[in-house]
Length: 228
Ligand code: HEM
View (tube, rainbow, N blue to C red):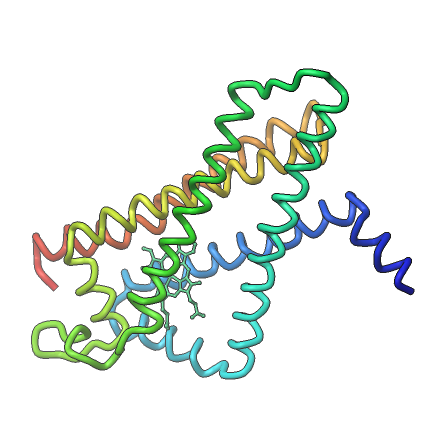
């Protein structure tokens, strides 16, 4: 049995499948989270109802959160392992290994955007998930608007807007680079499909960056024009 388990985890095909699967779980979460957040455009009632429905999932929500954390950890671990193996294999094949400028740029971008994302997540969870949703920070005008008010008031700070916009652009960049380098890692090279997958990865990155950024931009523009 231990042989079967050891050989499965040491199989590079299985590890690539795990990277793809955990990556898909995260892309699914990001798109779902973005769609949910865009409900802010429909006003406090719809946005807060959505958050209440999520919270009412109770234990199921904790199972989803646990799955997400496991996916993130597995994704980081196996991606780092595959990258190390790939560069080792290249070094063995050619005596002097010099990564191309493109390759090096993509790798450095992935590492830095990954670190930035991790820092952003800590700030983000403190901002909203762990914050007091019924407190003074949720009051807009004379109304206590709970999560909607909290998000709205947070985005009245231009520095926070800047940090969020930079972070969500990094998410978009990380996502599209991640898909591109994964295609390279598994050696998928189809004359017809590969260019389409590459284009789709860029479009997906742009949708994520623009979709999330539209929220702080909307709050700022609306506050300075018609007010809440
Ligand atoms: C403008 C951009 C964003 C807004 C307005 C936003 C809004 C929110 C809000 C309001 C919550 C708290 C939900 C609640 O406690 O009911 C939340 C939680 C969360 N957000 Fe975001 N978010 C944004 C971007 C992101 C991005 C880019 C990521 C990931 C890369 C992310 C990951 C998370 C995670 C992991 C949670 C915790 C989910 C949970 O508690 O189950 N968010 N977000």
